[in-house]
Length: 140
Ligand SMILES: [Zn+2]
Image (cartoon, protein in one colour):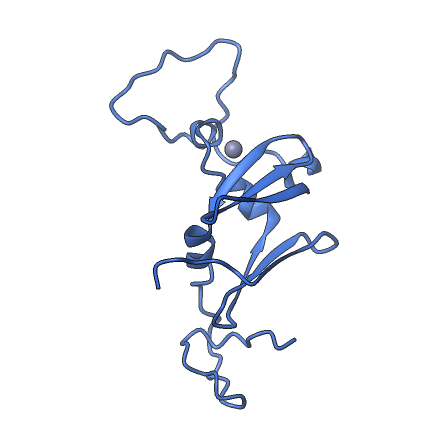
């Protein structure tokens, strides 16, 4: 199974959460704030202090102050989604309320379901307890 395509992607604007339902019934839930902070585009990578082009030295732009550390949470529009779309069959395109655009591959979203909740025994009530993360699958 090389192709990952969620059955559904939902945004809970009230709680600021995005969730993707995978074909196996598992669900990835990501805070929009976190999603924005891991935006893989070059602009955001640079803002996080990562060099988007390893091996290339870019002259620091005088008009763009380099912010170190976490961005301030002043502009909430940064963390609100105004639009989502499919990018081919491999990625989710997000337009944020501040007009910034991000592309997240389904694979990268799929991997984000990883963090296991501590001390939760496997849910064996529904026969779906083949995962180790103990997360209850959304039955709809
Ligand atoms: Zn970005």
